[in-house]
Amino acid sequence: MAGWGINKLPLFFATALLVFSSCVHRTAKIYLDNGFELRWNLANELEKLQESVKLVSGICYYRGYILSESLKITTREAKVLNMEKFAVEKFYFNKNRSGSSVVIYSDADKVLLVTCAHVIDFPDTLMRCYSVGRDRAGYVEAISYKEKQELYITELDGYDSVEVLLIDRGLDIAFLLVHISEEAINTVQAIGCPYGNSSKLKLGSRVYIIGYPGGYKMISSGVIGRVGSGAGESIVVDAPFNRGASGGAVVAIREDGQGLELIGLARSASAEFLEFLVPAESYEFSDLEKVKPYSGEVYVERHPIIRYGITLVVPINKIIEYMKEHADTFKSKGIGLNLLKL
Image 1 (cartoon, rainbow, N blue to C red):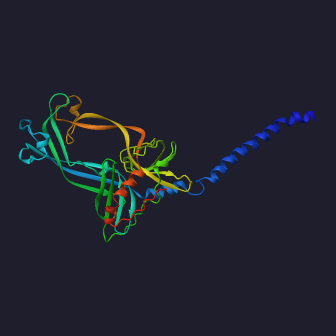
Image 2 (image 1 turned 90 degrees about the vertical axis):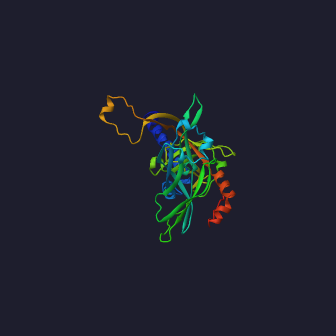
Image 3 (image 1 turned 180 degrees about the horizontal axis):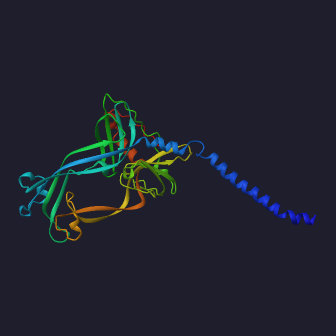
């Protein structure tokens, strides 16, 4: 009998270990069965929401004037004088931007999208001054005026125009009203998830960002590192951020595990800026430049150095408050919005 116990002891421990392993595996499986994974398909849900996120592109055309330093025109004078009379040179240029936007309302003849203000907001006037000493601006050297601005929405056919309905630079949000032509059939759907409550977000909660970073339609994920405050402070997420992601939808899994909720808009990343001296855009380099110093005109370009892994998010609560304050504007355009939060 003792011999049986000695011979069978390894078999007994092996059997016990197998039973224990099975219990652990079964416990994990039960957790998943009772969670959201098997009640709805996360990938399918994100794919559906992705259809309501559109790329918005803008181009702004400017007319500019170069002024002589001897004229001694101040910035205040430049705002009221006719610069064409004083200019020694006239020039034209344009600026381009693109970002993401979210469809929050759609019917037969119009679509309402929300995006970040900085995506579509071009300055009306640009000025450059002659420098006088360190950190002192002198007289106006060049001034440019916005002549016109055009906005385009990708994956949206048959629209007549894009109207900037509302814009708030402080919150960094803007609402775009797209008018659909009579001949076109609008098949665009508003984002198919409810508004969440950003004040109930918890640290470490996983979120998904749907947008166009770098011009590519894609989904990234991260966790909430800071929930912000009631004063509208940005939510901070550790998700990667690239140009074009601004205005993208930020969604989170609901507390009841029954789907996703919209908790804000991706706004920007933390960044530093570096200035570089560059030649004119039209300058064509030749092989001679490799051995001969460049002696042409130089210009200053500012380039952001993005701190990847830090994404700022406009809280949905602040967006909803703004929409409620401007309910009459939406109503005047025939737009009815359901602004209830979970």
